Length: 300
Image 1 (tube, rainbow, N blue to C red):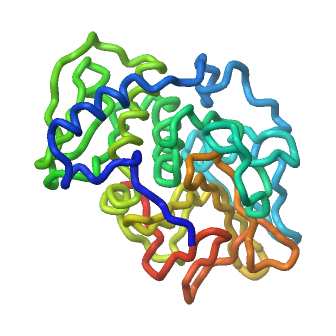
Image 2 (spheres, helix red, strand yellow):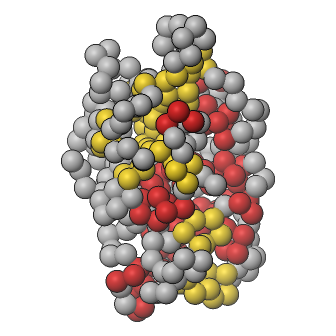
Image 3 (cartoon, rainbow, N blue to C red):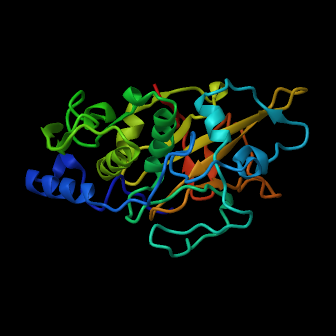
């Protein structure tokens, strides 16, 4: 299986010297970002999403199934509206090269990847969750734990970043320093996410999320195996057969190296369908990772 680091190509904060941590923290803040102007609920775009280019419009339910009902304005509804690149698009890495495997996806999400090897699997999950909360005006709910440090001392909320404070990772957790003016704008939000991607990953995200049984799966849940390596995929949509009650779901991932987010094929379906059946017995087999029992989790 492919390896997967959590965060940048540095060791976890718990085993690094303070000098290296501070230096990497400053470097992360200087990472370039793709230009973006807020455009409705998908703020990285310069124009609204055409109706026919969304995940919901392009990926039809299997015969006999229909999409489950979700509340308007919810994370689930937002995920269904994600913009897709044109049909047949290939997956590119953060540096523009093609991903070695082009047989694992059915569609590519039209969202930037960044210029550094940071927005990998857990990072993509955090990016989508944070983008939704930012667009929904729930910015005080945006926050993630760093990998290193004691419980209660490693949480990094956007609300504090937006007031001009900057987190400095230490062995014990996060130390804050006032370094800038207050700024809750989108560009500042993206700089915050770059910092999070540098110091969080599958290990830290798996600690934050709470386990849920597979039978209680919802759109927005995460299959995650935290570790070094680890992996995470996001449940991006669900459908149901009204006659039998059977449910199926879509998965979105990034991977290592950082790459465009994409909707996964189901390797267990001979027709290469993107729709997965509920893995009641586990494990969940995806094209590039096998998730053991107990891997389904949910944002608090």
